[in-house]
Length: 233
Ligand SMILES: NC(=O)c1ccc[n+]([C@@H]2O[C@H](COP(=O)([O-])OP(=O)(O)OC[C@H]3O[C@@H](n4cnc5c(N)ncnc54)[C@H](OP(=O)(O)O)[C@@H]3O)[C@@H](O)[C@H]2O)c1
Image (tube, rainbow, N blue to C red; front, side):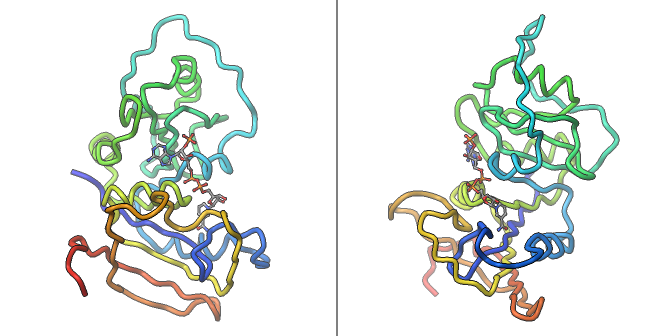
């Protein structure tokens, strides 16, 4: 079984997600206040996004005395809500096993060195393996469901992580907070970064669940993913 997956993003009208030039005083609130209204057991982000929340310190990694097997590690800890990071090579460092009120779960591949597992164990951070060299995102979701009892997960970006779950057909709902700005920065990440150029992949289609005008000029649009996008509408 896999959790129900809701992707939540704040985007400009041209689909860009970095808010550097948008000119809002408190840009975090537009994302966070809406995110809080979506019930979920976990939020999940890409390695780049998580580095805004993980340690700013660079830890010196030392090999462990004994070999640490490449097996999933569920830390003994009391928290029931989770912050999950897709970090295939183990680039995030941790001072504790929490981000705010959520327990951290690292999603790794087997190419991470034992010294990185030692770092995670020393901070009591949970970790799961999603593949040998590459991640199987369906397997990742199944493990989150089975090992942590995560029934609904909110994917909070960035564009690459959203794009890879979209491409794998694993998103059930998309929640877009549409900011009243045109960004226009060529090369800046967009809501879904799935692949370069046009291949054989079909675009993912949505059906509207609800639309609300919020903060005067923003729209909060909630979409359901149309699972059979082969049908023309
Ligand atoms: N507006 C919003 O709502 C919002 C929300 C979140 C983030 N953001 C912004 O988005 C920007 C970051 O977005 P981003 O697209 O550059 O990065 P991202 O999605 O946060 O992270 C990308 C990284 O995650 C790992 N990753 C993701 N999918 C993977 C997969 N299927 N297999 C293996 N590894 C995978 C890779 O890590 P490695 O490189 O280590 O292999 C990849 O480089 C930041 O500026 C952030 O502030 C905006």
